[in-house]
Length: 307
Image 1 (tube, rainbow, N blue to C red):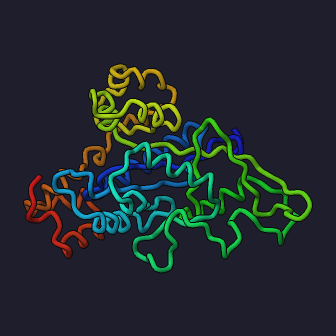
Image 2 (tube, rainbow, N blue to C red; image 1 turned 90 degrees about the horizontal axis):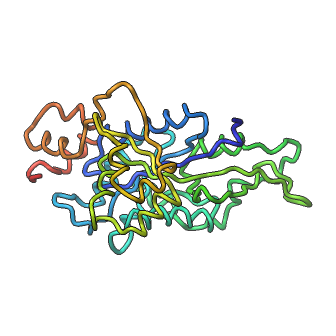
Image 3 (cartoon, rainbow, N blue to C red; image 1 turned 90 degrees about the vertical axis):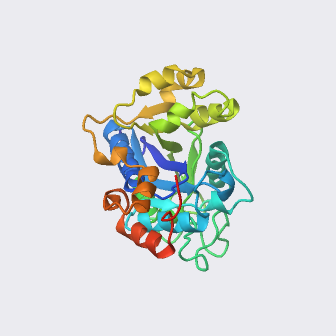
């Protein structure tokens, strides 16, 4: 497949990130590598969306801290970004509503900026159109070059912070190429861009718990968007999917990342990290990146809490 015919993907991960671990980042990287190996996808970005404070999970620290830790964890990444939209809402948002938010944002805006919690004064809040500047996909100064999807991909890859444009796989979105002639006749390049929910097999398994998920939400999440699942060691994802009628119905929309080699990051969890911090366990350096550990110690998080 050519670059233009491959499905361009943004991976979205929702969760507590309490705190964010090396395992969370590894999940993104493992999923991207696997999708690229299939030859059908190009991952152009990843979004981490921490849950709202009102989620009510015991021991959940303030979103102010969780957003900062997430930002520190991805500060060296050139493709994963942190999105604070969930945390900035009045109350807890469902996973379905978060996916729909990003899809709808694509419909409304091309050229919005993902907020950076470390520089809120200079980075516009997500969802605000940047009326004072030309959209990043349009440039009428150069009409000699043929528009290509590769140029757009390069533009997006340089800074995912300039794009949050996603839509379900059943639709296509036409981008104005950066070198298009906007005077008399605009030239277009069609690129299929899809948002996929990235999760571990524990979230997939939760779909099988009666009453935990709204069935209509599950239909949208799996049917309209799709899921990329990174299994934990020894998890039988086939068995999990067979226990849910909705998962069976949309089985083709569930991509299970297959890897013959077990990786130590697959067993890292936020719970283990909190316990290690409480007990002064030196293994915490295996679970969390050093900037996150430094922030936790500086802010005295998790040290005197249980769970």
